[in-house]
Length: 139
Image (cartoon, rainbow, N blue to C red):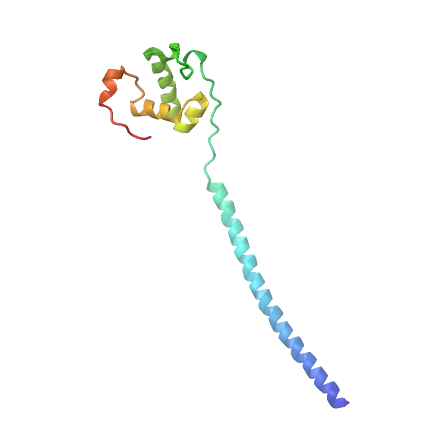
């Protein structure tokens, strides 16, 4: 009986030691994870502090006299060289202010290629015959 109790005690002690070693190993790994999480959170804070502030672009009000209206088979007054020159001047100012071609096209409710064409032509409309020498380029 005494021998059985000693064996049982020895088995308990052995198992307890093994469990303590495992728990120490897990504690060390957990400390490493905590340190790496702390480092990652510090880096995230630094990244957010260094991030450029997003520019708040103003809401564009499109003048009705020079707004872009697609042709419906009728002659439109907004297609004259004078009106197109005014429209393209607005687009140029907006483009130089940092707006993308797509943003300008959405604000003016026109096709992206229309604004690309204006940019490709140097923001200056010309008579159709003078434009024949231009190569087609993408924005």
